[in-house]
Image (cartoon, rainbow, N blue to C red; front, side, top):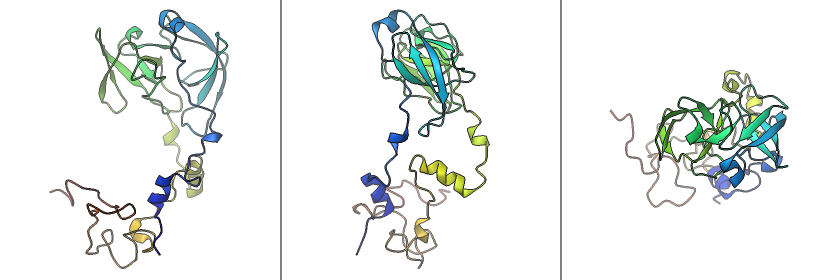
Length: 244
C-alpha cells in the first residue's frame, strides 16, 4: 500500500512538522506608524536583550514613552537602559528608526520597510545590513547584502546600524548532535536522507536497485502530469546535465 512521502507530510502542515512558534517571544518590528511618529519623535528605553529560539539575531525589549512595549532586532553595541528614538525627527544614531528620506547616503541600515507602515521586511538576520546608495525625490536606492540594488519609497522606515551576532556562522558545530538541536528548535528536517538511499515505499527514487541518482536508467525529471508524491526530482527543467 502506498503512503505519503516526507515531502507530502511536511506540506500538509501537521504538528510533527509545524514550527513551534508558541516557544518564540514574538516578532520584532517597528512601531505601528502614527501621526506622532510621522511628524515628531518617540523615545524608548531598552529594558532587556535576549536570545529567542525563533531568530538568529538577538532581540531587545523596548519600553516606549507612550507606554507601549515592543521587540526590536538588536544592533551591535546596544546596551540595556540605552535610549533609542523612532520618528521623522530622530537623530541618525545606531538603534534609531527613521524614514529613508532622512537617512544620509552611505549609512548602514536594517529591518527596512518595502511599503510605508509594513513594520519591516528586508535585512533582518544576524550580522546583516544594507547601504543607502542614492536619494531622489520619489525613490531611495539601497544596496542589499546580496549586492542587489532596490528602489524603495522614501517614506519607508529603517533602523540605523548593523544587526548583532555577525560571527554566528564562524563557530563550527563540531558534531551532529548540536546541529540536531539547532534544527529541532525550528522543526527543520534533519538529517536529510538522500532519495536514492530510501526504500521504494518511501520515495519514487528509492529501492536500492539503481535509479536516477545512482546511475540507473530512469530519468530524474518528474513526469508532466504526475500526482503529488510522484512529482519529485527536476520539475520542468530548462537544462539537464553539465550544460556544456
